[in-house]
Amino acid sequence: MPLDLPHRRALPEDVKERMRPAFTQSRVRGRRAPLAVAAGVLLIAGGVVAAQIVTQPVHEVDSGHLQVVAPSSRDLDRCRAALNDQNWRSTRMVVFDLRKVLVGEDGRFCELTRTRARVAAEDFKPAALEEGSIAFRSTKIIAGVPPAGARTVHAVNSGYTHSPLGPGPEGVVTPGFFVVETPGVASELVFDDRTMRMPTISPKPATVTDSYENSDTDPWSEESVLARCVDIASDGGRSAEELGGFEPLMVTGLDKHHGMMIAHREHEKWAYCSFSGGTNGGLQLLNVMEDDPDKPFMFTGDKTGSDYSVVGRVDRAAKSVQVSDGDHPPVSAEIADGHFLAAVPMTDDEAKTIPTDRLHLVVRNDKNQIIYEGGFG
Image 1 (tube, one colour):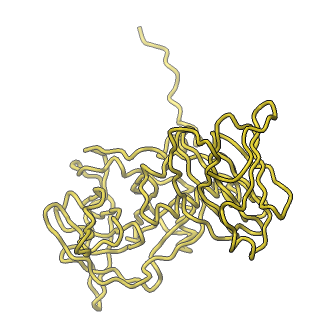
Image 2 (cartoon, helix red, strand yellow):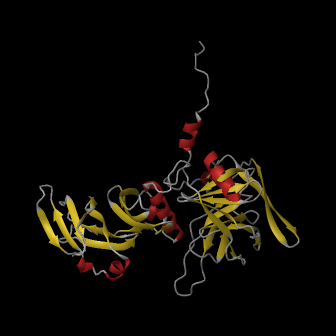
Image 3 (cartoon, rainbow, N blue to C red):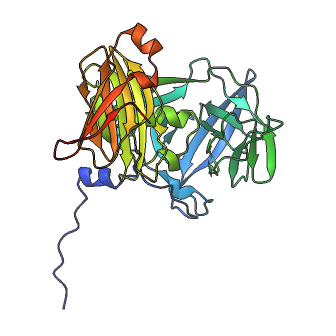
């Protein structure tokens, strides 16, 4: 008896978008994927090495290919804007923990983070390796055409005599392209067991533009400010394990675009970041203190606009914290998870000379009783 099954229906577009890898997901490692990019050909004309990438299905793929997925329409829009080329096409995107790299059908690459897009500078010329070539280079990514038959790739920094950096994480290699993250300033690329010195590359090989993963995101929302802080810390060498999973906890000065944020990860780890105008600091992890301090502890203070932002730790019994510098009325701090954030009005001259013991705190419990009054511990 035949079964009366419903007709097959295509997934809605919003469902497809939610199924795509997000930056917060862990890196996927695997051995097989149905499609890959085929042979990359070096075209040498007038001494310039150019990479041409042609896509076609293959049956055998190398490790890491589960990191290669189709880019979303938003990914393509961001890269086309960065390249200033609305006709640019890409069907392959390599997903790392904190960044994505789109592989163009014309051999051009585009790197995306949560708040930025990077593409090769207009005057950048692909550089030849002993075998293969480099077609894109940024602070954290190297991409191009691999040597024939290569299956794995690592970037290595062996230029420091006393403290050499080991190899970075394994990159992605297909017959037509490779993409690898770098451990600082890479001096060598290692394809399988073949080590190749990095060729000379122009000092500014990539251009960067502001580009938000969510097209509707306000650049000054809490999420956007935190995303910029994470991107900057990642560029500075902090790992995805350190930076991943943080959410905004408290923020001051957001409306003025001058302030500081405290972020948390599952209310078990904390970090802070300052921002001033168009400049953000990188996300800085706060030391986890096993015991609540007898006195409030000040992690950091920073001049942000017309205020001096103070980040500190306080007993978890505290329900309110007031902070003053002795010359101005006290201000109420934001408080959560045993941490507090206060914006104390202060002139530039006052902020330059402020000693820690100049700040005065009044801490109250849930019955409005003073449980501490004085300076920092």
